[in-house]
View 1: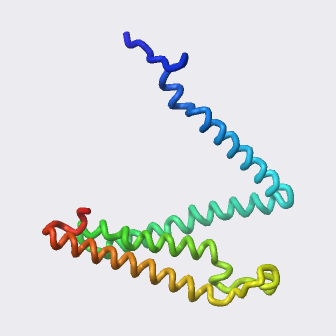
View 2: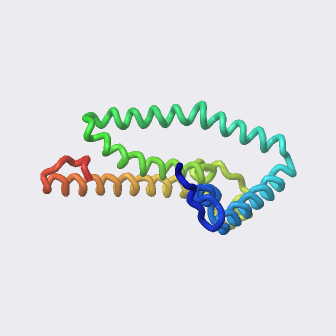
View 3: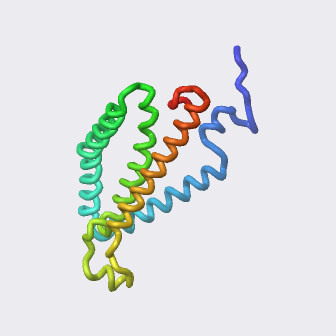
Length: 164
């Protein structure tokens, strides 16, 4: 018969499942903040917000996941040999950051802002496409440079480039 270890009057497994009092307080505060934001968000047009969330989930799950899964398979398949599949991360990371920047700044990158943007912010919407392209090129260039340096280092040590 195994005795149950007790820590401060309760089983040790229960403490790890619940967490510390500070973690519980932070979790309660985050739930309260999320509830407040949800009430404020849904107060005006709850049906429109619910439809937007449902549409975004469907668009992501039914269109975007298969799309970027196919792109990832094309990248890993296009790299050829199995040991070169480790090199796929040098394409995935800058592509993910570039896609994230495009997602966040899409209206400005795509030039889809109205005249009130300049009046509200005092800034021009010109140049975002060029800056996004420049940032994307720098990310891919830095990734290619890092891959080249790691490959060179691996070649000088006489081992396979995919072993880091």
